Length: 527
Image (cartoon, rainbow, N blue to C red; front, side):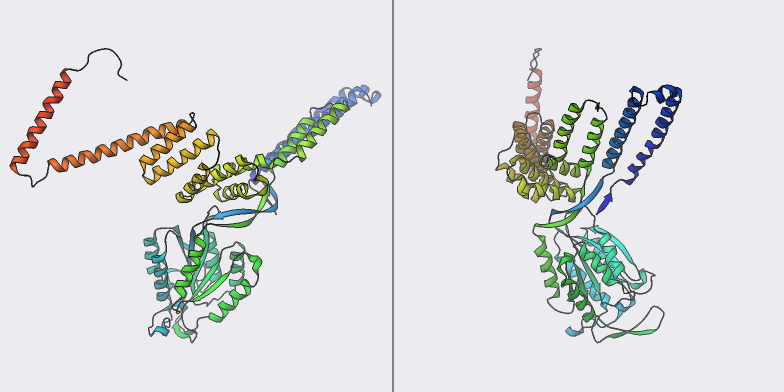
């Protein structure tokens, strides 16, 4: 597996062309000027100087080339990276072809409704049972179209689903494959949620591309759930061109397709079929989602970035360009040192840096896997500091994704271990941020105080401590003023009560005037 993150950076290699043309022309001109000396002294000072100049330019060019390759983000080779996932993202794929207008659904319960109406009803039941799942809506007819990106606004989803009709899309035919591919594109690559695809269909397709799309989804570890509507006995409908057509629920076809893919376990996910007319179909579907809500660790194939290796070669070439090769001892000594640097393992020190770099570039999925690798890999088990930073990095990823409960769980885990002042202060600081976002200012104040005590240089903790204290004081004052206002301005007070409150206010006003007239007039600063 070979890939380049920023191929445009490779255009910087073109800079070498004019540079080499300039130096080649320059040395040719130099040879012509001293042609007599050069021919008579072919193996002496001039010849060695020219060879040394060419060697230096070549090595510096190599250093430049490998530096550009490192900046372009070249990756080759693969490794299995652990990825921690929690929460679900579900894409609803609705088959809105004309076959879904057949009036043969729910016959087993003595009812009759169109397949599309039954699908709307089934989707509504799913939404009413969801708790925090992100949902997208995809329309599949002759093409696939993401009608609603991932959202937790279930009211918008219900509004869209209730208005579904074959007339929404002008494409002809039925293409479940394009619908599944559109659903895959609706899941963000950086998401830490478990992805699922629910296909509401009667299994009737016209392009024969379903197997390829299903294979693509399962290779990406996105399970597909086919929810069948209609009856195997069939029903007659009027197609888009006005001709009567008999259509059936393709139950056997979908079940056979799922069994074929599930028999091949190397795909990483499975396909399922549920008959919507069965009473337990909804419960079974929700049960599979509940099982996946718990925090799980999966391994994903990832291309290995080689920027450290490429930069090391660039540094070696740059150092060699400054060496006088006539001094062989110096050459051998430096070469030995460079070989030790090249082949020595520095992964323990660079792992945390690489994971932090991914986090700062908002590549949360990659950074989660990298931090998780630090906390679970046997090579880091003796490096308690690296493991602590790995756990802290996981908590920061959860905070960025809004998973505050998981983030707090990781931070609490760190409090039970021995930490240096900086890291301990950062742990208390992030706890304070979570409490602020929850609106718990007293706990936030305590956390920021502990952050300052652990790391006195944490200026952000000091600032947030002051801001939280002011916010808490303002809320208390606002609550007190509202309570006093409600007491003093009650409409059902008796006349005697009003007179008493008026007298109290006048006495308080006179008391404050006397205090104001007796203020200390010294010049001393009151701390």
